[in-house]
Structures are given as structure tokens and as C-alpha cells.
Image (cartoon, rainbow, N blue to C red; front, side):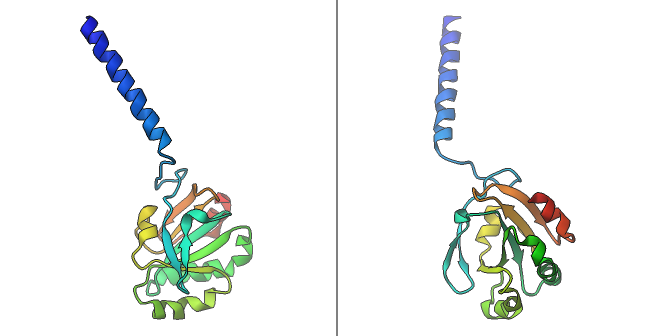
Length: 162
């Protein structure tokens, strides 16, 4: 009986130490609403580095591809409703392999939205988005507030997430 008690005390101690070690590692990154999005570094369309973990306000990232018909529809819808999105920073994240072709498609949106470039889909994979169009909204701490894969269809879903 004493040996069993010693074993149980040892197991509890190991669990406590393991839990404390995990708690000290920092935020647990995840891909679900309520989780903190794993920060990654991608590029702006003009070649500068953009750290997704350094956003200073609520930010929406819309993952798009220049040859995607639903992406074109999504971008037109966002541009049409840009005045409703003034309280949030919006970035189009191009996952195109051909940057020049992508710029021709996105240049008309550059005056309204920020343009980011992620041809390796590093950011999308980090937050669990694997298709275009996809929408992600994070707060200034990186907490995921909204996440939708595929064509959103209605701006109200985004406005309600704000």
C-alpha cells in the first residue's frame, strides 16, 4: 500500500512539473476561433517583410488567388463595402505563384486594402486555412475572432465579428 502511495505521489508531482513547464512556454497557438494565431513572416507585395504577429489593431486577412473566380467576387464585395470596414485594417493575402500576374489583378484594390504576398501559403497553413478565398480576423494580440474558408457571401458575418 505504501509503495502504491509513493507511486501516486510521484505521478502527481510529475504532472504538476510538466504542467508548469508547459505554462511557462508562452501562448499556445491554435487554428480555432478564440486561439492565438501563430505569428509568421511573409512579404508585402513590394517585397518588405510583414510580421503577422505585430498587428496593432483588429485586422482582417483575406487569402486570395488571381485565377480564382470566387476570390474576384470576394474582393469586389469587400471593395464595395470598404466604408463599412473602416474600423478594421484589411489585407488581401495573395497566394499566387506569379507575382506580376497577381499585381495586375490586385492593383485596383491597393488603394483600399493592404496587399501581402504568401506564395508558399505559410500564413494560411499556420492558421489552418487551406483554400481561397478564406477570411481571418484577429485582434491586436493575435487572437482569432473570425475564420471562414470559402466565399463568405455576406459582409454582415464580418461586421458581427467586430
